[in-house]
Length: 370
Image (cartoon, rainbow, N blue to C red):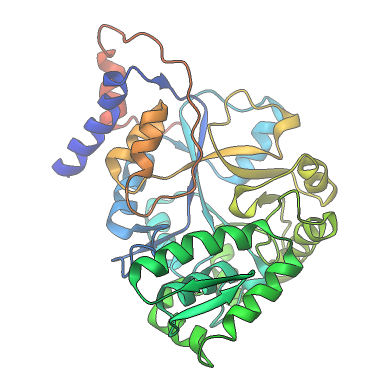
């Protein structure tokens, strides 16, 4: 407990040191999964250590933590509150989210999982995860993909091929991506993807039975698309609209309750995304752009920002309270945190001292407001 108190104190006070702007309003934190230990720094780059996640939720529970229903009601009635508040979201629906469920249930905290519905099932993984496993651990010395040869002889070659090829696959239309991944898979031994998923079982997807259990326990289930296709300008409108509509319909059919929220795969969206999301029946949609919900209008409800959860308690507290490009860069420097975008903002003059009551509240945490 003392070590956690020290980390929380450092995280809060670092904002005063860096002359940072205060964050206000609802902070929507974005996670992917939790693991007890990391087996590979690249494959587990988006996973949080279970011990760290517990500490972050222990800190967060001292504040107002809201669920999607409350957020939608707030947005509809009076707009987003400026008081310190938070929401916890998980993208991708990894099996390891069941460990997060235990943490959240014991603390009675609401949270949401965004599910790519076409990838749900036993022994399944998203195309991006399968590609990652094959490139980093698959039995091949080189492959051909998207008109290039990709060497896989050394760890360094694998990491470089992983970084570049994944980015290229995310940037092409769905039809070309599907064809490229199938061709890539064929260059490895038969059953290689299954073998690798057994080696990294926590990266498999949740099943519908597991999602039904989580939903029954109060976890809110939103859409993360059908096949996790990226909503970029080269993606056809038909694919984007299918990703919106079919995933929502499948969640409602399987779980028996309305699906009103969406998280854009990879965070990408285009000018037409707000119209497409609304037409598909959603009420809120989330990006990976960095920010809180303070000042967001009803017109912006389909491009809402989130905060990439840092992989330490110190970084988490820092991210909760302070908006600063150096803080965001520091948070991203931790292993396991990728993808958050940062923007430089105005840094006000440093106050002479932090108000004692506020500082104590931020470090130790106030009683949650309800």
